[in-house]
Length: 213
Image (cartoon, rainbow, N blue to C red; front, side):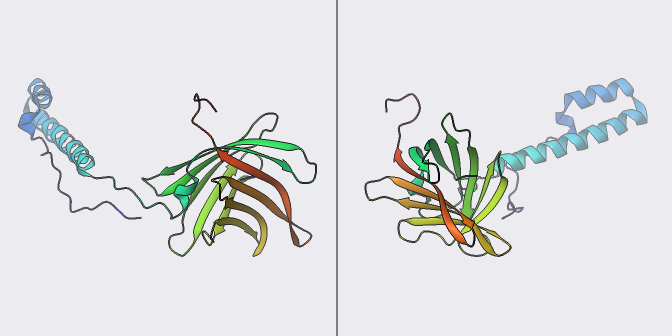
């Protein structure tokens, strides 16, 4: 594109917290200080050690579960080599798209990098809208900063992201899966009350870096 559920508190730590007598370092400190002061040191250090152990045990007992990635996103995952042009000038564009699923969050991570001499680079996150319906996305690039977009989801082979300004459509990115396994991306902006195509890309799947094209 161009320019919660909290952990289950009922889980008991699987590793018992150490007691004061299991902490030789605490005992050595107490013996050196002696008397009431030594007892106070023992109590404070023991409480700190127990708290640290409980936190560590809770971390070990927690299970990271994979989040559901939006249906249809899997069709886009991978590395894409794209070529196209700007509509107004005809100037060619060449780009790389690297699209990966983050199963811990359920988001799709999209990296868009134009090849030189172009200098457009964007990081995108796509995800299911919660609460609500449809999809949400954010794009960050050096030219426009952060933008927020939304989509009703896949309509056949088409996925259209829309950015609104004051309730009106300001920008759109239209992704279309092609029958032969390719992908096209059209970028449009609102001008004089109508959507105008700004550039278009045709993408094919590419092998990972270091492998022959």
